[in-house]
Image 1: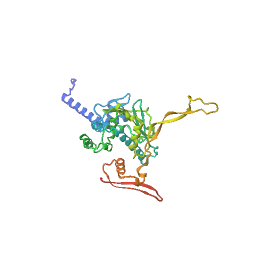
Image 2: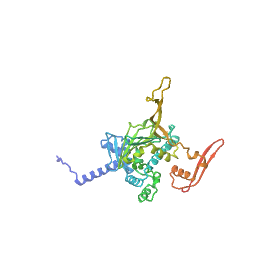
Image 3: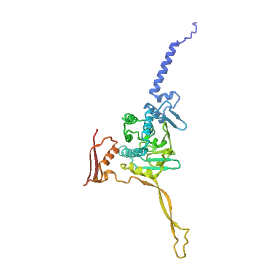
Image 4: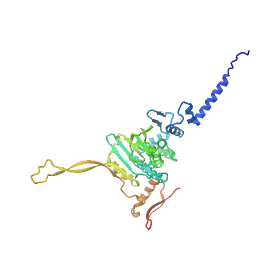
Length: 378
């Protein structure tokens, strides 16, 4: 009878096999992460949250320090390095002109309303609700709240749009800003105007619901940052005034920025920066009304009417700030060249002066007004 011989494998061969298997597993995980989760004991289908994280990581938004609190569904991210540079430069360059933050946020909100109107016309069967911007303050909590019912953002868009800088030309613009060679008034044209909020706020919350999501699946997503990193989470408890979609910015103002809680200051700035905004901008404003009440200090004689006195009473109501007619509806005779130039640059995010401008009105079977610009650069 042949002896029972137990064959022993070569250590070198075993090591090679293990190495090849490990390498193959690593490649499979990087190429097919969904499949790998099954072998790792995870679920067969990954959540939209984890897929969004992978997409963000591939775009360079996330750092190695990114963590996720699964129970609370709070995802933590660090800003892309360029964002940190932009915030530092903006704060250092614009510290003497902090008012610009309001211009940038109002402009962004108006752009969101424009985009929603465009999507409703081209990609949706649902007409958009009447769109507007609303601004209010909470003096006790030192909050400035800016809200619109524009297109809104989904979770991945909040991470992408507020966590990194992708617009072409921005890197050179930031470099020039650092060297003092760039016009800081152009920050909005490079997509970095949002970060001017940190001129006046030490914490910013953004709550958004997207018009692009199916109507029954729209969720409120909250983005929070104090400047160095940001978190993203669902926020069903947050309310937006828009019935379809919208975005709300909650600015926790710095102690030295309390002037922006004053309705008079905000009113002046909004009238200045809203000249070319076509959507209504409403400010939650305090007004004084006088009520007529009996004057108890005066005794009425028999047969005489009781004397009355006026007593002031504070009431709050939404007041429209931009009541002026849009520039294209005004008579061309009363619009000067500088107004046309400012409208051209603000509306079309242009850097050049228009080569030619024509403003006219046509009357007949069809009546319309038109304002046409020919750019000087292409």
